[in-house]
Structures are given as structure tokens and as C-alpha cells.
Image 1 (cartoon, rainbow, N blue to C red):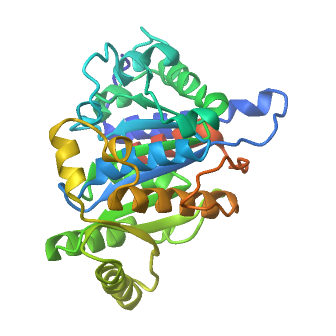
Image 2: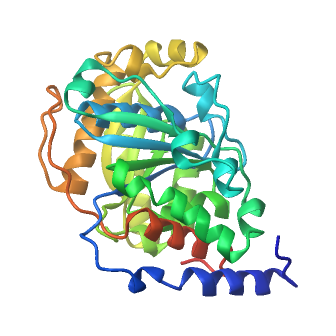
Length: 332
């Protein structure tokens, strides 16, 4: 691996590299169709990974091809939550070039509804820290980019389950994604920490950018729709008062015993019982995401395939933005 003199030199090298748009040397291609969505939370234990996985399978019921990436670069465990016990490889193998994207992806069985509509879900297991990416030479980083760029042709949505908290590794996914989902619960500590994430993200994610929808708030484990609305309004009012802007309220997921049982059994609650109260809420969220990202109305209670709208930048664009954010000396 290339060794840099100090972090400033390292960041400068990476910044210079990722700013080079090699696509300018290739024939023009039609506009990308891939949508990138990061999922964050202020604290652990709020159901962020459950919602990431649930939305992925709900999007598949609408005929979408989804890749779920375990983007918690410090505590990758989405494979366990999804009941994947036989994953032989993970994203580290893409980085070292020992395996291809098709070998690393773990494909799930989806519902009959999703099969009819040609929807699907695949997991890209995590298991890598930032240092492995930072130490890559330019040709190795470009090879890694090229590997993940294959998702442009095989996926409609990439859902990235990022880490909790306000560390740079988690926030960088929000800066690079078209859209960001911020998960909170009605607990006071969760509300406080969600506001902390909003404050840390700053103005770059307030409004829809890159063809996406910007920052969206989801209230999980709500006792009722009214409680969820009250929680969202508290966060939105505080954000407007002290930060001058406010995230969009996307929706809520009701507290449901099926969720806890599914977690204990290493299953995704939306797969085991999509028509539970929590499952219906997740399907509603997926419908709202499609409406906002693609401008297409869908019926939440009757999943139906809808056309995929174009997004900008594709996976390579996301990766360039992510790398700039991870290794820059200042926030985007």
C-alpha cells in the first residue's frame, strides 16, 4: 500500500484522484437510474437496521431491485440480523480484488409478489474500516469503484445502513447519498440524539440534491400515528428555530411485538409478517420513497410495479462523493 507522509498529504492525494472524472474519456451514456439512500440514527437501538432491511424488501414488493449495503464500517452486523450465516465474502474482498461483486452479493428469496414484479433484494456484507480504503493506491481505489459501479446496471435502489452517531464515517454517507433517512424513536434521548445528527449534518442535506429528496425523518416504535407526529414536530420545530431549516417527515413505524420476535430469531419482520402493523407501516414508507424519488404515486396496500425514474451520478458518482467526504479535512 502507498504510504503518505501525513493525513493532509493523504487527503490531498485522494481528493485529487477522486476529482478526476474518467468518464469524460468514454462515450456518453444514458442517464443513470440508480437511487442511493443512506439510513442514519443518533443512537443505537432505535431499529435503524431493521428499517433499512424492511424498506429494502418492501421496495422489492413494488418491483424494485434493491441492494442493501452494511455501511456501518465499525460494527458491521447486518448479515446476522438478516439471518445470513453462510456469507463467505464481504466488502473487504472487493477492496483487495480477490472476489467480484457477483460473488460477494448475497441474494435473498423474496415474496411471490416481488417475484411477479421482478423485484429483488441482495446484501453486500460489511466488515471493513476506513483505514483499508484510505491506504489504497489509486489504481486499487479505481478498481474498487469499478466493481461497485456494476450496481448501476443491476439495481434500482442502493440502501446503505450506516452507523449511529455523529462520527464522520456515518455522516459521510449522508453527504454522498441522494437521500438520507434519519431514524428516531419517541424516547427523549433518541429525540435529542436525532437533533444532534441534524445539527452535525449542516446545510448540505437540507434540500433535495443530486436528483434526490434530501433529509427525511422516520419515527420508529411509535405508540400511535399521533405520537409519531408529535415527536417529528418537536424535532422539526427545534431544527427550524435553531438551525433555520427542518427535515421532511416521511412517516412512522408502529411498535409491534413481531419486530422483537423477529430480531431474536435473526429474521426481518417485514419478510415474516408483511401485513403486521409494523409491516404495513414499512410498506407505506417504501411507497413514499418511490413517490418522492421517482415522482410516481403507488398504492400502499396493493404493491404494483412502477417505472423507475432517472437519478444522477450513479454508483460511481456516489463513491466519488463519499471518498471526498471521508478524507477531506473539512465537511462538504
